[in-house]
Length: 255
Image 1: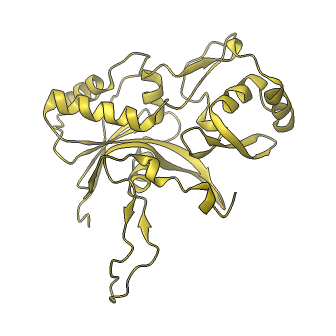
Image 2 (image 1 turned 90 degrees about the horizontal axis):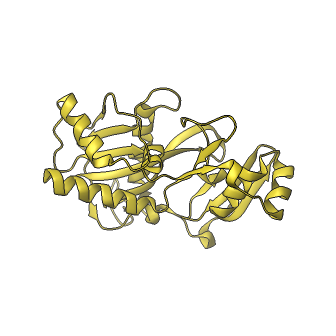
């Protein structure tokens, strides 16, 4: 139970460049804002600043599309170079139509365009670039958690989020790509409800719920709020990451 949950945007967070140390940037931002990190705090980071710090840029002029990318690009009305990157980042194409390619990303998430886009990144007109998801979002979260623990001596949790559309519903919503330190999926099967009945199927996507809350503050356009401090969440410690949230294909009724 979380009787009192607060979410605070870290103000005036700088633009992130390849090679930047996110732990240093977060610590400095907290100091400027008079915020002191505590044990049990959650740091929610927008995927883009993690990808930028890890230099996950790709320049379209440097991409040579293969035959599969050229064909899929024609069917979906997309740039063949970007489609080539989508295929490289994916395990399989799940659905496609004009303007949209839904894939299973190599990390297991079913995602439009493998999470690749050009929003909120600087680019040259004669050599456009796009940003890919981190190579390993859970590992990125673990590294950041360890760095902050070593420098400040506090035990924080880390969450990396992104936004995506959802089947059956309009609009994008935040969801968790990577996490460190806490159970991303909490199993309540066997627990009692208010009337003593045993829960039979209930599992709570805690990381996704926190990601959606943080994403609401981060925004999707020019807000410039890529890090949110979540305080008061009651979380279960765990060494696992967000891989627990991915439903096995054999159990997916819609693929």
